[in-house]
Image 1 (cartoon, one colour):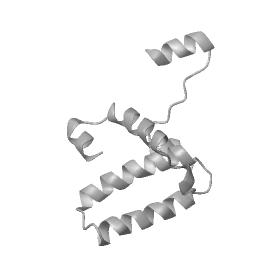
Image 2 (cartoon, helix red, strand yellow; image 1 turned 90 degrees about the vertical axis):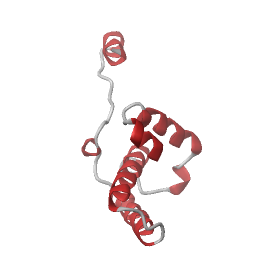
Image 3 (cartoon, helix red, strand yellow; image 1 turned 90 degrees about the horizontal axis):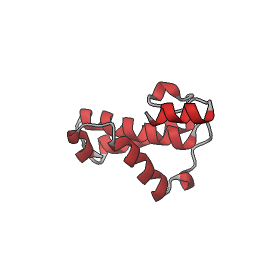
Length: 100
């Protein structure tokens, strides 16, 4: 309902990206995610389902944060991560909330 109100007041649609397909591909982020996935497999020895879920969440965060810009670790701040997790927790199941 807030999105409808926003459109009513401003005359513009509220742009919110809910799926990874909504973002343009970013090869620098994808390269970092490959390294992260290798770390989870080789050093953390996590299950395949945990890896898929974790990498998916991190990918969504990095795509939202970086957009099409080159990967830059200095952009990752506690505040941006907290905001992302706050928004994400509204849309996940209680079991998934524990993982996040």
